[in-house]
Image 1 (cartoon, helix red, strand yellow):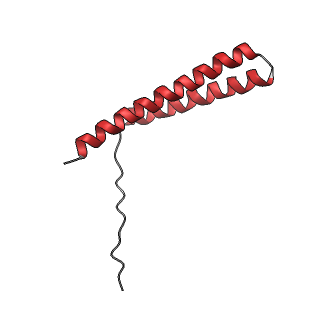
Image 2 (image 1 turned 90 degrees about the vertical axis):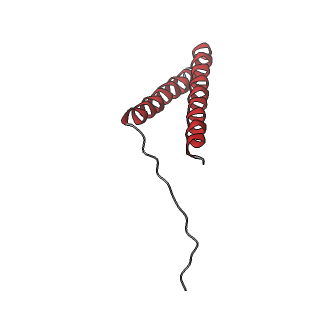
Length: 79
């Protein structure tokens, strides 16, 4: 009657500075999101486009850095 279908979840330990960088990145994105929304509501279109460009660029660069680190970590762990 035992179900032998198990799901293994591996939790990778990360150094403290990786978590710190993630928190800083998220706060950076939230700051620029707030600036972008505020510029839009105040109809400051030049400031809106500049802050939107910074927000999108920051998000894409952070995503690329995460993907590079994730792929390197996966290559090291695979046999």
